[in-house]
Image (cartoon, rainbow, N blue to C red; front, side, top):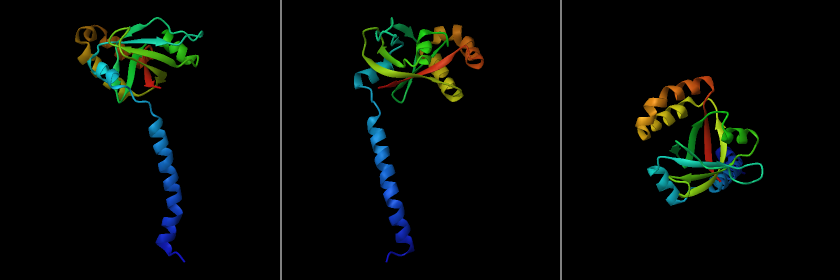
Length: 159
């Protein structure tokens, strides 16, 4: 007969093994960016976002400022932009080209990030470093826009 501590261990282990298996499968399914895209994201000033139209075709590429962290691209945009409208219509697929329209690219899933003030602060700090001339002109509009809802953050996660 198994004693008290061993009995608890025997009862917990199957659940722990199952949880570990689920975590390993989930971690393995996370898309990782190719090395050339990661390098380009560190060096580039702009990304070119194309969202998927109703027909399945890509939209015209839009040059946009971006923030990159943990293999994910974030952009701040108006909620009336086509990229945000398409996400609202459940067309979340996007093509992200880095540095130039025909630069290294990846397909991503777009989603709105709501109420993450820490992310907004990191994004704006990155914009201040990357775009010093433009940032002085647009900083207040970004700050006010995040507060009022006239500006939103879109997360592009590689598929």
